[in-house]
Length: 158
Image 1: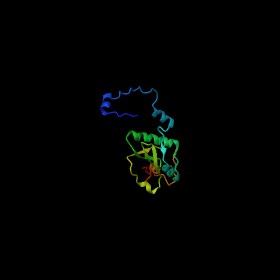
Image 2 (image 1 turned 135 degrees about the vertical axis):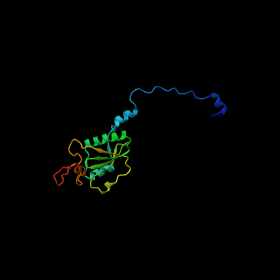
Image 3 (image 1 turned 90 degrees about the vertical axis):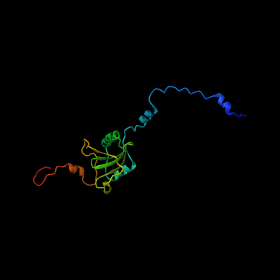
Image 4 (image 1 turned 60 degrees about the horizontal axis):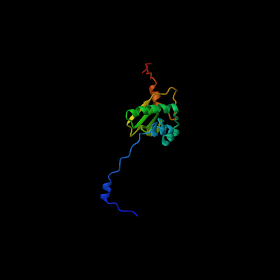
């Protein structure tokens, strides 16, 4: 049968002795092992929405393109960026910097491409070594056209 313990009896016993803490185990931390096992360390992810937008616009991202996006996200993260607009070739990508995820993609000629909101940073990625690794089937490339020198009616290159 259980007996009742009074408050005075509890006070007479005193507090429990502190638990002895053992030294932390040697070797890698669990979080580091898990990160290596999952293998998503610095990978750039493409959301389902962005993948659908890229496919519907005929844009293909190569592994080299994703590597350049990853480098840009590293630079933006170092400067405190959270939501970024990335201009890659003739495609605009909106990405979550902390999550390293491409949220959406806009190709030239899209009517809704004129306004981007909730963006706190932007990066213009230089062209890759290979000629135009990202191809769009939607209209001319305004960035490439802007880099083409113009010749005025006097024959002078401007």
